[in-house]
Length: 459
Image (cartoon, rainbow, N blue to C red):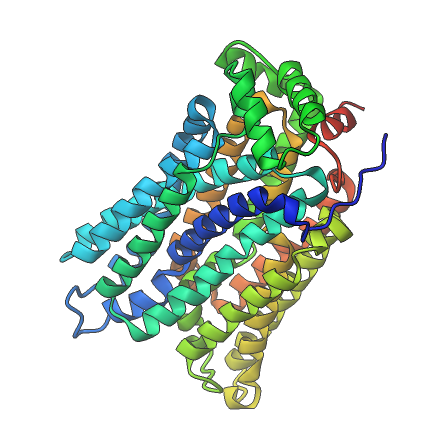
């Protein structure tokens, strides 16, 4: 195997790929805003002076319906990728998000909030089905992991943005801000060429060559054209039935098992507990070291800083190392958070250790953003042949939606049944299983072309 040539992220000749990555960053900002929207705004909506008053049960549905919409979004996104390509699928992804912001601006009843959040969930599910494939198809192998990591900087930026906007603005005014950002994003993607893989798959060879020329700034066009042609041709099948039969092959089954487990770990690690209910967790923990709303802003800001600092780490350290570090850190943070509530149950004065829940949340956010947030999507873009990537992405997105909805809707009933401490301990135990799983079952894909990865899975 030829040793991959070193490519600098700051090479000015890569500017077309940076333009595309910037568009994906904007998409992931929307994703981050959608995911954490409930943290600041449910607090407003559950106050008695709110124009749209929500009971706690209604508030839980507003939070959970986002993830319910992801079910349909996962399937819709896969279909869009299959028929229209990953770039056009991203444009389709932004449409239900636009509808969501319009409905939130016009909302005057809980039902309109339900529909708005469900619509946002459609876009969320479609996002996970298409953007990893788009970046995997247009980015150079040597910087593919870094590109995905950079794209995921958008999520923590969205966390910070919605925390700040929610602190200073009403729900209606903030919806207008996010709507404008969404419209800018959709205009940007409409001006980008389709990925060469999709154009090659539908037989537009000259358009595929032009796409390669644009994304690669004219460098190595002939070599990349042949590589894409080989990759698409070697994985070409004629029908959906044939595509599904591909999953009977042992290497593909192994890849699918890895992706399902990674997306499952992403949702059962405590992400939804903290992202959707972070302020409530701090109030339950009786932590007044810092105002809970301000603490949420600072914690989300730490995630953004971590994402920026870790841009080069995925392609330098590899996917496996980042996931194992992330799993270990998340487990420690959940154990610490559970210990705080155990001490409270035992009668200890919470003012003596009120720093513990805040420090635990900081550790969770930093280690989650460092590895478990970006890596599964990077691996998804690398493990599957071109013809079944959209199906694999659909399954991954559906898996994420399933466990996200379950963890969000069952959080409060589980807390009522077991108590906060044991819920966080269970999440720590489940996340710790990721470390041996990654070590023994997951192949390293750092710096390899998509064809090389497929060759490795066959051995």
